[in-house]
Image 1 (cartoon, one colour):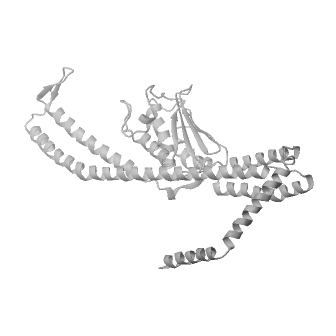
Image 2 (cartoon, one colour; image 1 turned 45 degrees about the horizontal axis):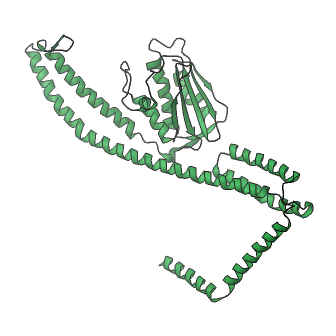
Image 3 (tube, rainbow, N blue to C red; image 1 turned 135 degrees about the vertical axis):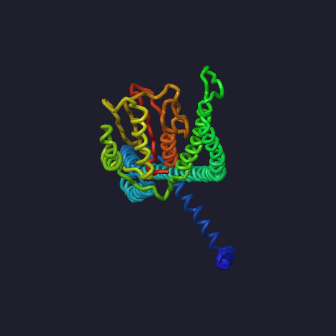
Length: 373
């Protein structure tokens, strides 16, 4: 009902405008104003040609707006600051024109930069929302699949395991587990007991994979839990101390480098990186180990370079393989969960991961937006 009343009020106002000469007079006045402005520009063509004073003012404002664009992190603050400069330029432009006879174009330049900043902010916001929606849809699909597997597969694993255990006990009582069952492809003999143990081991492995997958998928990274965090302090207080007995991990990070991150998942991802080095990079011990995080920033992103001098990445290892669940080297004792969690954290932050092939045995780079996901 309230919307109908508001709509009827707007309609009545339009009818009122149509019944009077206010609308026609207003349009005529606007046309006359624009015409007078255009005539003024034509008459003063020589005055708003490029001048020394206008060029200097343009240069100063370009440097000022570039600094604001680069170092002011919040989009709203950046836009308001540039618009504030535009407002200050209005009386400056009028005074220069009045006393010097020069019509400078600095105001239009700054307004154009403000427009570009606004477009950039709108595009960034739309991209973040789109990525967030895709991520939420992906998580919902993953939850659905895991719920289905857990509900239907795990009970059947237990059902299949029970008769195998019963048969194993039955044959053990009759001393039949050591009897030959089949010939392997390598020429060795597989006994009854080995075949049954392999079957039980395979079922246990399937069950462990389901549990690990559920652990990975069901750990949600919510956007509302992102917060501004001092990265240097986070590393020195929460990440590096937990590994001080195993490794001397170097950190090269400027002070007061702030990013909007999901604190808990980020810490776990960095811990996984260091744990992966302990498991895969230094199988013979941590003597002489050199691990280092180098953190820097660009205008929009945080860049984290991680290097170590341990066992190098396989030559055929791709970014997709490293960040995929369940893909690991043959000698790895894990389940491929650490890299998958790192990938999930990077995805939740709308970041990017690169493997760098240089003189370091292991070198990868993580890009994270300063504003979070």
